[in-house]
Length: 150
Image 1 (cartoon, rainbow, N blue to C red):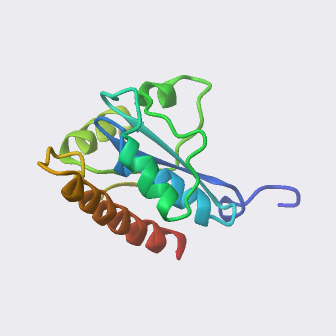
Image 2: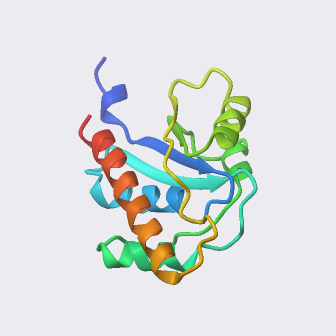
Image 3: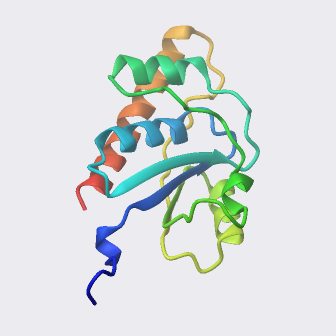
């Protein structure tokens, strides 16, 4: 088929979905977009978004040389609009968001659960919080790296 776009030649849109969209999903969005050669484009959203990015998410990403411009906590409904971006792959970060993704996109071609501990868990000291964010960053980076290697 001359002039047609093969599935492998087009940009595939990846949605990282959680409940609050304040940390892990935003890390995944930034890391994937930084590492992509153009075949993948990442987005993130929440099923009940906090409306703001956790400052430690931004600090962690900056400390690892990842872009933070344009990152925001947004509602998954943005991707359900009729003229919204077509999502090819959905990666969720908790059981609750995974179930909602399946309900929002029944029969979706690729949906996977990445169980990565939430660094937003209330901790007593800033040192423990920073360590949790760093651990989450590396866990997300490993998963995104595997996706980019496909």
